Image 1: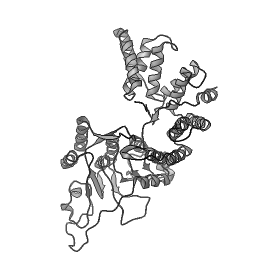
Image 2: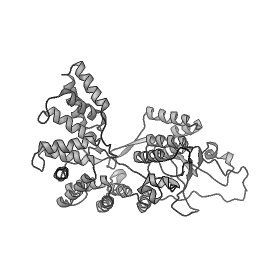
Image 3: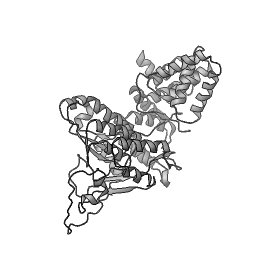
Image 4: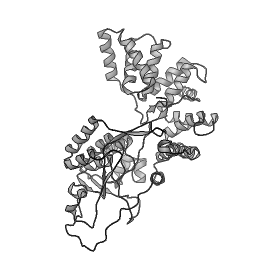
Length: 445
């Protein structure tokens, strides 16, 4: 019966939401990426390689290693090669490294030595390195933080972080005992610029900021032969070279990032939708669930090329079998509204509640609207309050969240203090059965 309901839920939906951008570029030895606990047990996790953009899935993977790692065993060497990413995710990774007295080093453990190697640890990567107790980096890059609005659209732009986040950066660096000059250099460098510090073997260690600040702690001679030739700053790989390297080493989500870059209109780019579809298809074939969802969306709307209804259904089915909560919500909403299918309230409730159990905020909004409409559930002010409040707390700003807030306020006006207390308690005690790594963002918001 469950399989029958699942298949019934997987239909073509053209009003689909995009998935929030997310990377997961922690590269481990091959057998460790398949079975982490067995790998650690067999003493095969010889290194951790944090590569490219730092995002929340990276934090989750480092946390999983921390949980599985024996308390009395030295932590694996951590290699860093990143231009930055999420500041808050980097704090959490850095705290794990401090707890484990970790050693970080510039370099790529999967490439042979190259005298032209370009070390990179910039922006958020520096906060990860700050958490380690031993550091041997060839580069740190500092600038003030920023966030991206209208990501990949023609009007994409970067805006400075808030004073609150800047203060969190300061407190974190103080927590890690980092020289205050690091924070000063960060806030003095505009977010659209970068102040790079490289270790230079032609200079005495005491003459280099990266040494004095504790980010290159070993092999720092105080006397250098005056005839030693100055080292040139090496050329760095492009974004596309980085992503192809990640793909070649089993990080299939990197193909999805390539797809988004090919399709991007930001900074005057001309999108290449054919290349974007090929890259997204590869990620989907390699079982990236959000790429499967996106293939269903893209083929159903023709946004990056021609429509293909049959193939669209195929990818929605794959995403559903892999438990993608966002698809379950959208499919359930189609049954609720009768969009493209015969209206079915039982199937709508089944699919949307499964999505809510997966922690999808838009499913909270759907349940809120259904309670507000009064055509599905028995009248229950506390239950309606619960879903509307969760939606208002977790959905991204936009029309869907605004509607949830409107319905929430309507219920609050009708509730007694005791009823509100019950509603608030249900919100505080709510725990999804399984929290999805991927959340949806309304493309119209």
